[in-house]
Amino acid sequence: MRRPLPRQTLWLLGLALLALALVATNLGAMRLSIAVLWQAHDEALRHIWLNIRLPRVLLSALVGGALALSGCVMQGLFRNPLADPGLLG
Image 1 (cartoon, rainbow, N blue to C red):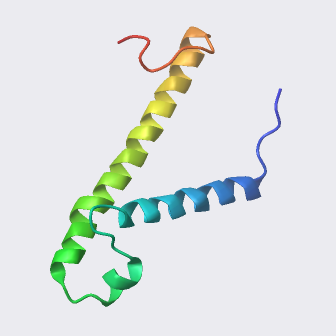
Image 2 (image 1 turned 90 degrees about the horizontal axis):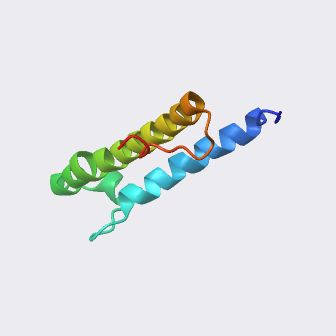
């Protein structure tokens, strides 16, 4: 039986995930930095970031988490460590 991860490791992983999400929202055809968004008076930049990029990043994190959870459920249900979400189609 394995030991659980220390609390510091979980915090570091969470901060790394948040940092990667911020980087992902700033990359694209037109790079948008947080400083530019904070100081910009152009509503188009804020619209791009809030209504296009941020929902995509959040939705991809939710979908990834859902696939991970369904993989864990499948492995526990079938008691097969090789089971994955695509097992039942």
